[in-house]
Image (cartoon, rainbow, N blue to C red; front, top):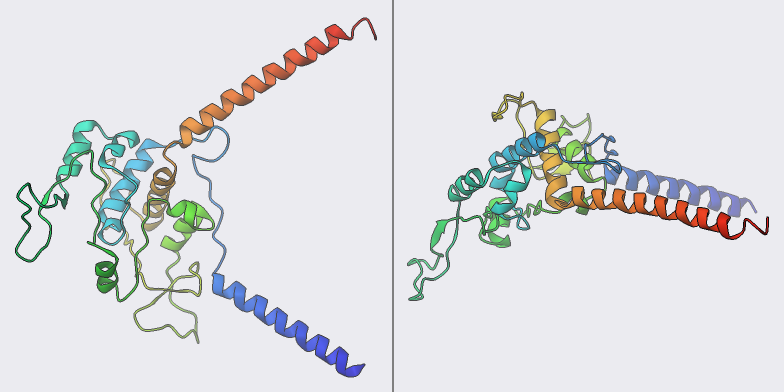
Length: 260
């Protein structure tokens, strides 16, 4: 009996230790933030999205692709068609072999200025090139990142603002940075945001927290650009159901009035 009791206690301690280890491996839980897209009447703040694009373009795009987005999509967040064309023309995309099947001598593709019909230019030619440039780590595509990560935009914001000095006794591997919200607390990406590193056209102060919030909002949009349409349709459907229910109730009372 004593042996069984000791075994049960030991098993419980081991299980508790495993739970703690698993919890630690997940990192801290991201704080819950309020977003303009929350709730039934959620919407996008175009000024916020344009600042988020600036952060993505000037900071994130050097390593992370957003291959689900086209340059023409930028008109949905407040840029005019002329502005979107100018942004596209500033990037180069592979043109592919010309009609004669020619490429550069080294076999690399011929490049041309991007058009509105092109997807956003990728920072690397392929996954192998991306790994080679990042010490073996593959920067994830950001198009759907708020859908792909638990916590969504809250997690992205927390990750971008979660870089800290490691606590005493923490063994940080070479080439890694400590991040309180990343699983395992060690991340290959160094802190990408530096206060005042970029300038916003609307004069907003580019603090780390502001940049993190703006780019997180931009990534909410990139993952679900139809969010406003979906929510407007939801409101219309709810209104229709309410009216339809009221009509059914009135009809029921009319039909059963004589019985009652």
